Image (cartoon, rainbow, N blue to C red; front, side, top):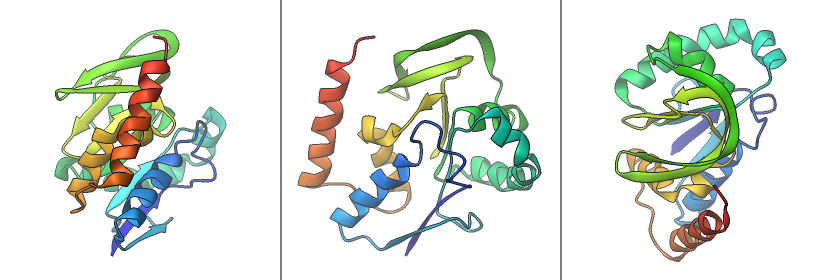
Length: 186
């Protein structure tokens, strides 16, 4: 059984980042893959830490400090992980990821990372890297259901969990993501 987890999903979901778990769950359900969604991140196969407000970050700072060793281990091992928005900005320097800051940008962007075009909404002062991938560990300033908009990232995460996404349901997801990308003005 694959264990999917999210850190404090009721608070770390500013821009619908928890939708990434829903996307994984829908794909796994379509393939009859056994999985569970848990809020216990210890020993999880996939871990999501979504975007949050400054107030939430401050309120949960002690628990986030407890999470840091787990994230360091996951990064070193390249384990399936997704850090989004302020969570990524908070943890990146603590994980040795240098962030280049600039003026705040709030817009849809298309990035080229690891020979893939990645699409999403960026609202941050982080200029680089807007998307950091190490193995299957992803940190990003691109908000919301990133996996719905970028099926190749979803496929990468699923593959690292031992699941090969295929079939009509996945192909329909790819078509929908392409339609959204084509309809978006950059």
